[in-house]
Length: 269
Image (cartoon, rainbow, N blue to C red):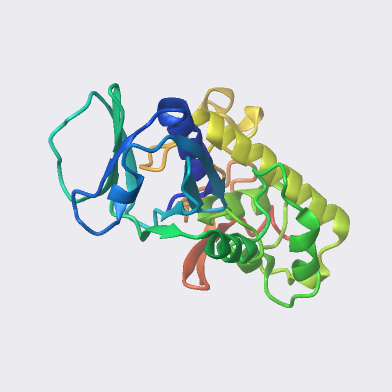
């Protein structure tokens, strides 16, 4: 499932390519009331965690998109292009066409429904209006392992499997540490590191988490070969040597997701 930086990058792309234009809106798949927005000006697009909200002029409702595991938004140059595959929502101008395929959600929400959605999402490190104290209040009272809390979208918005594993490694934290055993300074460090890493994710369009001294050229190693791209310390590196200490990276199931960590580097809280 795409992590939060992907949605923020997508929101920026929608605004850059379609914002301020009256757009054609349709649902070739016939599963979304897209015609209600046809000819309206696209006025806003913003991400809240892993959720995207798109606004149009003179329409109280906003489009809520959740990509889920399989959703993609594809931008193509041109207009009146043939529909390829199951397109849930098509937006277009005279210059560009944007096709949404395979989302978990693509729906119109009224203002009350938008408020209900955003209120149940935890603070998003990529949003200027995010309040990290909201997350800290829940984390500091919880017996749940910090690795599970960071993935709980009601606690923290936008953080997924890669970022949670990598930030815990970068800070040397045992992923099974109960939230209530963290001190405030450690939480502040987690929040700050997540915000920095995720901003780089928006800028680069991929997740890179290794520090300069652990980059392939600095270490004389081969670049990582993985569909997810980017250089990481522990994510999907089970059994491979830790880039810092050489200990084999471990994996375990936690809350039905794969957790990766180094048992030597991450032995403190």
